[in-house]
Amino acid sequence: RVISYFSSVLPSVLYPCVDYTTIRQLADKGRIPTELKGCRYFVSVNRYEHKKEVEKAILGFSHLRNKYGEDALQKQKLRLVIVGGYDP
Image 1 (cartoon, rainbow, N blue to C red):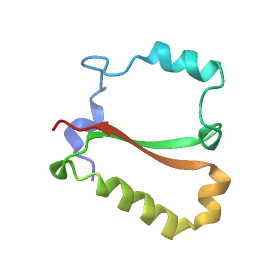
Image 2 (spheres, one colour):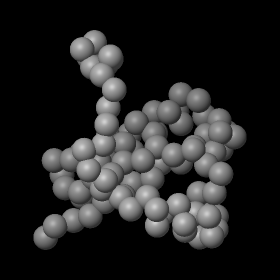
Image 3 (cartoon, one colour):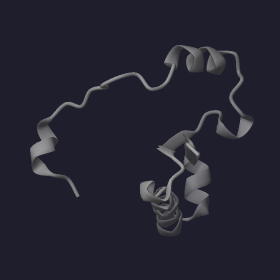
Image 4 (tube, rainbow, N blue to C red):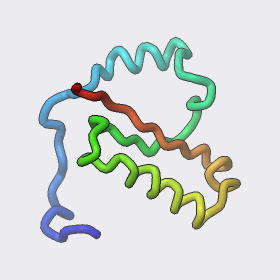
């Protein structure tokens, strides 16, 4: 659901949480896992905590697969990537 107030707001990055330069350099050197090359990604970046409900990303991707089929996901090279950390 889209909140109409935010539909005209242009989002911006408050602070860079990822070192994009290093990631781009690794990608240019071909150090991306073969399974992820040339793919389109749904990325979930969170801490691994129950309150973050990471399972919603998994369920959402599952619904996409159920709606369009596994073949559609493979043809479009769609991947779900879940990354994060944990503070003990």
